[in-house]
Amino acid sequence: MVVLMLHPFIILPLIVLFICQEVIANTEIINFLAAEESNVDFSSTTVDSWPILNYQNNQGHWNVDPALLDTPLQQVCESETGIDPANPFSCLHELWIALDLDDENWMSYSKFTLRLSWPASSPADFLLEIYSPQAILTRLSRLPHQSTIDGASITTPHLSRTGLSTTRLKYARIRVVDTGIRTPTPDLPASAAQAIPFILVLEQLYLGVLPASLLPTMCFLIPVLSCATLATPWILSYLDRFIKQARQELRDFSTAQEKKEH
View 1 (cartoon, rainbow, N blue to C red):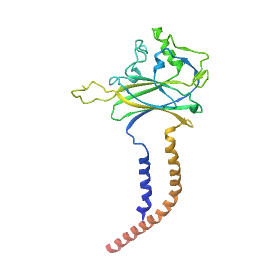
View 2 (cartoon, rainbow, N blue to C red):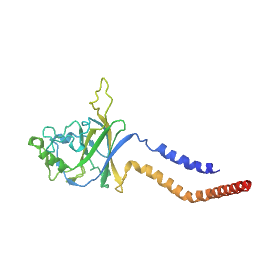
View 3 (tube, rainbow, N blue to C red):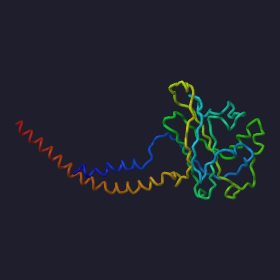
């Protein structure tokens, strides 16, 4: 009888595990505030050619070559002075993404999350950073070759996609470094590191903490946990009778054994 009563509570975790996505990847997450700032016109620079994540297309798949093993993440694609003047935005070990948060469907949300997932079989560490348009312009202005920023300037007024003179556009910088030692093969020496595939997902945060993709799971778990909480006192009360009965049987058995010994 006890086994039959516990059976639904054994099945429930299995159901939850079945409907949830299988964890087969490593994940790196950064949450950030979508503050409005003065826009910057990068139409004549390489910045304008960066891939974009937005409301209509909030995820993408890329491959990036990792930096060499034991390279500090903060030093990946950086020179001793902080910026490589010859190659500021095309380093093989990093990727720059534009995050368009100006869509009307996202205007009511002030906090967002950027989630990066890569296969657990790919030994690598990732670093996610968020830049404002002004931060990108400042980075460009520090380069000795000023021709790189000839077409970049703060435009006032500059109308964004929502028709405002400000924008919530942000830029994400993703850097990756190798963290594993692979078994050498004839086609792949031990020192060679394969490109790391990864997926980026941009989502709004409900109440500032809950990613949009987790909302269906939470809607399922809340009533399930509520029912379990309400049922717990009844279950404990039901099992208590069997516990008392078992204790009494043990006491009777011990008493019978003592009588036999005497």
